[in-house]
Length: 276
Image 1 (cartoon, helix red, strand yellow):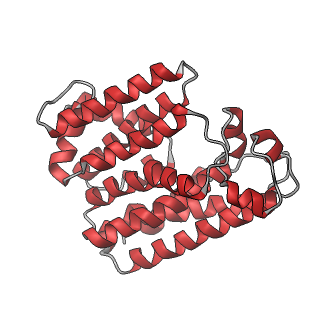
Image 2 (cartoon, rainbow, N blue to C red):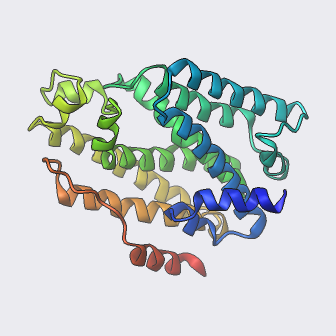
Image 3 (cartoon, rainbow, N blue to C red):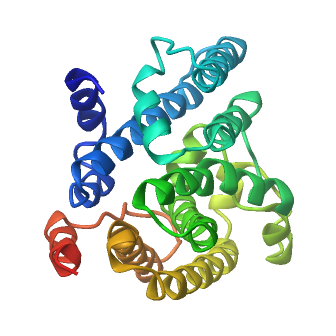
């Protein structure tokens, strides 16, 4: 892997809790995770751009073709930095493609109150697929690795959805599942209307419960896994659980102040796990 490519990937990750947690990994794993992160950021940026949908779909199709080309032995320029991690850690083509599929869901149309099946499929593609790539880099046993990717990926994504309600609404998006809205007595799917509803707290409580259940399942998996393979996932889980707790403590009524994990608290979490 070229030094410039590794530095570029690290720069894209710098400043995030992800970056801080991944720095604990041995260099080959750390560099692989930075490349995975850089790929995810690039395709996510396409999904969040304001340009024409057809142009963004074409950009995602090019990424899809580039990933396919890598697995056929062609080191294409845009995705070449992934060739090393793919070979070193046995990363699966279908997981990269699943991430692109998830971004494509955001580009085809603004997601608004998806049904449960679509909601779960979206979470799997944009979060758990990234987890499946990650656990291979971490060196987890196959079965528990896939299970951890499922549960921790969804826990993190559900927390993100709750944290980013207002930001997503500014894009015309609402990821809360329609069944949860209906159960709370909310008939609308327009983001602004839903977020102004007094019943929003009931919907969010449902999502909080789901996230916490996934965190608990992830905890059980990590508890029985080799410690060296779950150091980074433990940090991410603890950091995001604190964000979730902060969201619950803040409440869901407007105005909803942003919740961030102080860097000092993140560093404390990292120090707790650095030498385990």
